[in-house]
Image (cartoon, rainbow, N blue to C red):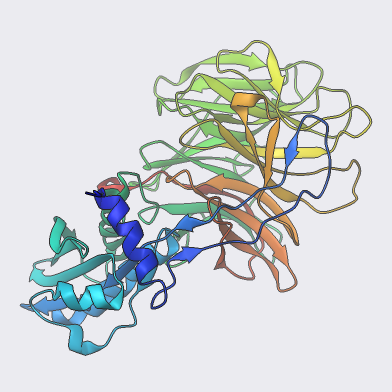
Length: 462
């Protein structure tokens, strides 16, 4: 007798009803566009099974009727943006009811079904969310989530938390909906200030109002602070830390000359690592923000080391350097305590290329950066991902048109936000590294150096 696991049965269900709902998303094979000895360039997007997930129209009671459809729409879009499902949400009102007709949903081709109900619980609402396994005709998981009123600035974030719960229930992996992206935006006066946006492109708001050059935001691991570089106090770039709960900031007093830029938090959340260029000693330094002391030199020399980024375990640093003696930067990896550095970008003597702005994935050994394969100012930048485990011999290219810079990983370790320059202008774009799917996050803004937050969860709610 043949026996199938639950996942196997869902796969079979997907193929059986594929004529009704397309369950396989197959991106075209991308051929190699260049040849670098010892490096595999290009990315083969493999066919990925995407089960059909239906979102049943949400119910409301005791005053929750007014927000039920709004919450339903946010969750449906979050699940679509996860790039893990074929989402069925354009459904007739006749499917609304107190129960779930598993046979009907099975006939419609659904593998999973999300249902929800909202009820008033002052000062907000309680969302009861259920995930149904249509194949086996049962409730797979259930959760209750506090949701503030729609006029609360954290209303959408609370709903995003529920969306991420669905991802975790099915895949036992983190989602990315309950997160935000910080970035620097150039004003018409030529200044730069920091702004925030939710993972779905909504809730766009200004974070600082210094009317100066403020840039390179970096989220703390707990999502409650942002480190950045600004000229607002001394007229020279210095590192500051902004407390998102109090809106207060403080300057990191390193006691060193030179320009202080590109801060990053250590995974311990206490140390801030940044670059100093110029002055009496250049390089990458670490500073204990909690104790307000203990500047430690990690790397440097006659060259410029900038843009450090930590591995998830905090044991290694990737960074950008021109230490090869040319003006074209490369990506290196070293121990987070200093020492010898290994080259991971595809440098060849006489064909050095140009690679910068590394960001280490929150899970695994992948470092994203932007670059081009030729020296000089010819050609446009593309988003690349190097596998540190094999010293960058496998290099994946994620973008193929326009100009693409400053990648930053989502907390799910699967999506990247970057600055994309297309015919319509510059804006924020997101790419799914598993399927190659793109989406526009915010169109037509002159944005710099985005940084995707960790999963905020309830920590992001005040």
